[in-house]
Image (cartoon, helix red, strand yellow):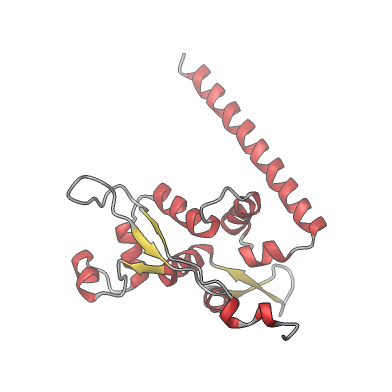
Length: 189
């Protein structure tokens, strides 16, 4: 028996597709939100999607120097499209019914509520479990434009620093929101 026998392809478990209802606006005949079917995308597919959503932008104050910037919205929409098995977002009849021509535009038309769309993206990134790393990776993607793969690849100290910085930012935002609400209530009295 080879020392790598357990690593052979025939021993690798295949991940099952998952179902999720990303919007409450599409319902079956019983009024239940329609579930969509998703597959797990591969690391190679994710890299290609990330590359397609990345552009080079000039660094302010540094002539001839550029840095990569990920368009988080484009990245997230492309990941969702790549993972969606059903409904078929490439179907011309479905696209025509919404007056769109691309699977990404169809996705935005089907899930047109911003809150639902964000939850949808979070669900695909996070999966079923409540994973603290996935929650921080989700925040890092949307607010810091750091891809989940980049966040997860950070060494433990860098990751701990980013998580602590996110916690501080969230705490500050919550306090600021509370202060604004209190100030607003005083004005309306």
